[in-house]
Image 1: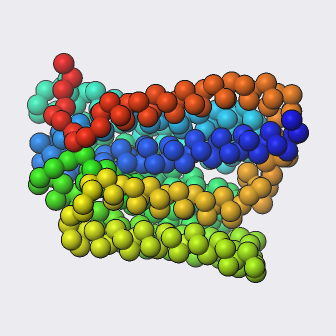
Image 2: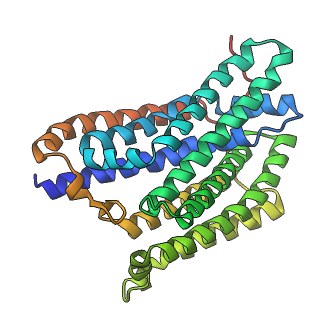
Length: 328
């Protein structure tokens, strides 16, 4: 198997892991950021809706970073050299979420709200740091104020997108008053995420002239225009749903948001492929030796489907509306 093909296979596997993580952990981060400060029963139900899934969702992040380390070590070193601080803050947020999730059920009643606030803050910190890192990565780790401003904008945009995913998840998993509230959140963050994607996309075209040239190069532009067109259509369909505050299938809003995430990811992939570090390294320059990749491929062909199967199985077992959270 050629070195070029091996590198392509591993970048596809890493891309799948990142995308699945963004969708899977995105909704539980969003639910964490949506926790209402003055409604304990609602907080309990919301946390119950993500209880069986949230920890396993992070497996995909570990998988993505692991593939980056073993398959593209040069890129791993360069990326985390620039993103060491926000990556550390993201880990702090993830740890805070894990600790808060358990402690809220084992502490005194008077301290429970404090741990709920910690869970909310951990979710917000994790989401913002992921968006900030994405923005910093997109601009090639530029150190000027324009790059930092873009990174902050990306952090806010990703946080809003996760809240949109979390609201869609709550529409699917809850009923009654909480579901009505979820529709209101869905309406708010559908509009904020739409504006955020437009702002980030325009800023990306501004700071990356090569990306601008790729998107508007004819005749390719006539085909890739399908990506933003479908994305806008999904936002429009969601707007119709939230105005009616009901839909024939509670899963539909979540599926629409998932399509938005997939299309956004495809847009990023189209913008920068074959670069694994924008403007810096291509996947072939950063890849490990072909012999190493060929050996690692056998492990990947076992590990990735295994993670996918147990993830799918957990969602099948805990399908349907959320029940009351219990730690007994």
